[in-house]
Amino acid sequence: MTEFYSSSFEETLEWGEKIGKQLRPGDIVALNGDLGAGKTSISKGIALALGIKDDITSPTYTIVSEYDGEIPLYHMDMYRIDGIEEFELLGVDELLFGNGVSLIEWSERISEYLPDDCKSLQISILEDGRRKIILKGINL
Image: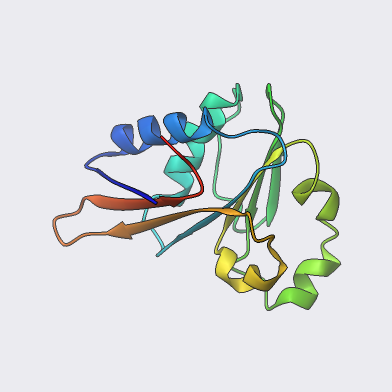
C-alpha cells in the first residue's frame, strides 16, 4: 500500500501520470472517493501516461467512455448502477478483461464482480482541502 497527498489539480494530474506509467493492458483499477474528491482528475493524468490526447470527462451520464491511446482506456462510472445485475447487462466483460486499462469509479457498487488482483485507488478530501490518495496493487 502506498499513500501520498496532493494539494492541487496539477499535482493530482502528475500523480495520475506516475500511476498510469505503471499500468499495463488488462489492469483494472477501482477508483473510490466522495463526489469532487478528484477521481476524474487523477484519471486525466493516467490517460496522459497512456498516450491519450482526448479530454477525459466524468463518465457519470455515459457510464462507459472509451479512449484510444498507446493502451486503450475504459473509464467507467458505476454511480448510477443499481447493482451487479445491471452492471452485467452492460456487457463490459470484453472491456474489463481485454487489452486496455479499466478505471472504475464508484467500484464499490460492483466489488463482488471485480477480480482479486484488482488494483485500487482511494481518494479522500482532508479538512485542509488536500487529497489523501491510497494505492493498493500499484507500486510507485
